[in-house]
Amino acid sequence: MHLLIYLGCTLLFVIVVAILIFIYCKRQKESRERLLDEDRAYWWQREEQSILLDEEKRIRKEQERKNQLEEEEEQKKKIKQQEEEQRKKIEQQEEEQKKIKQQEEDSKKKMKQQETIIKQHFQPICQQTSQQEEIRKKPIQQQIQILNQEISKLDNNYNLTNNQKQYYKIKQGKVKSIPHVKQNIETSNPELALFVLKEQLLRDQNRELLTTSQEYSFGFGSIIGALGSDQACFKVRNTNLDYDKIVNDNQLLQQHLLEFKQKLSSSLNIPIDQVEILGVSKGSFEISFNITGNDPDSIQQQIKNNPNAKKFLNEYCNGKVEYLKYFDQASKSAKGVTLSFDDFNPSHNMSWEGFKEKEQRGPAQHRYDYYFPRGCYGFGLNVKKYGNDDWLKMDGNQGEWRILYHGTKQDAVNSITKTGLRAGYGQKHEDDQCKDENGKDVMVGEGIYFSDKYTVCIEDNYQLKYAQYTQVCNKQFAVIFMSRVDPKKVRQSSSMKKDNYFVVNESKYVRPYRILLHEKQ
Image 1: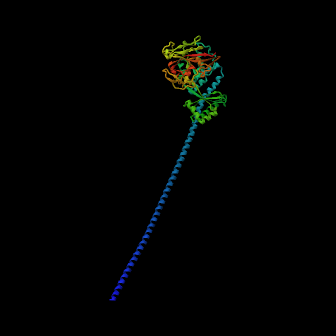
Image 2 (image 1 turned 45 degrees about the vertical axis):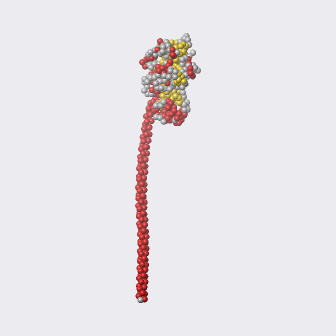
Image 3 (image 1 turned 120 degrees about the vertical axis):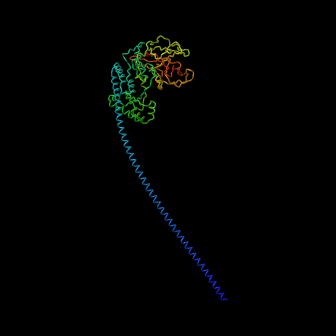
């Protein structure tokens, strides 16, 4: 029994031990399997990581290779683009060089053509200058005869511009005495009036007077400037040049004028053909010129604002550029201011010796003191063109116009033209206040200056000195226009009254009807 128990216990122990061993072995196996699994997992993970690393390396290498290829491709493109740009640049430079070369060739051709044209242009100037020098050597009477012939020839000289023709007419009209003209002032001597007009009126107003037939006459209305148009020029004087030496050598004269044109046009940055040489004159050495396409104010402003032009002119003439009015075109179809004896009306010639100083004239609403031009001789003008003569009568009718005197040296005469040209120094009262025909306050404005006394026009202390005396052989004469003006259009400020000044704003309200000659005693 005890043996059975012992055997039973032993068997149980063996079974328990066996179970324990089995459990232990199983656990050991499981542990080993787990360790193996972990080891396998570890190595698998390592392998995966290695694979991933390899893949990343491969991808990175591929990316690097790709980037490298792209960079190489980009570099190739850049190089190709640079080469293309360089090629285009070279082509452009070659094209520009061709253009520059072509421009230089064109410029040389143009310069050569211009020089040829300019030389042709200067040739008549040289001829005119030489002729003037030769004419001055002749006796006075012969000078006048030659000058009249030369003035007639100018209009048929197609080598001269219109400006040059008028300029030379002025230059040729400066003879100051004519022995063949009867000098005594008589109401039957219009030849003297015509000559004094030529020597003074049209000199002072910068015009040329040609006596002609009635067919080509533009009458005295043209002198007042109702159809006029100012022409002007600039003049520079070089005191370092010998006038006689230059004008006696045509080649030297052409060379000097060409150089002047080139330097002036270059300094003003304008085409050389815009500089028009009108002529040369003595006074050291003077050049008269114009710049076409520009008005005088813009030219002067351009010179003032251009350092190169100022430098050139400072070197050439100490910067002194004179502005001269030298001609007034009487009509678009006129060659000059032309008059004939038919422009006079001898029936209205008279003198006023023995007359009283003044008398009342005019219609009732426009009464005024008329001061007789005592000491003057009057030459009546032809006024048929005005038609109705109520304006000229002295009976006090409603249409009678007032008598006023206008001295010949008056830039304001030339300003009231259809071209609206502004007058010069004669406009000192334009901003004064006065009354118009309706009693309203207005400014005097620009216009033609008059006086009710002819003596105002010739006084030595008269600041504007409209009518200056002209020498005719051994006598001196002044010219004054005796005009009728519309009384409703007369302007006079309070400051003008003390000087006996009057202004009419528009020339259509002015009708010259008599020329007065006053001999200086």
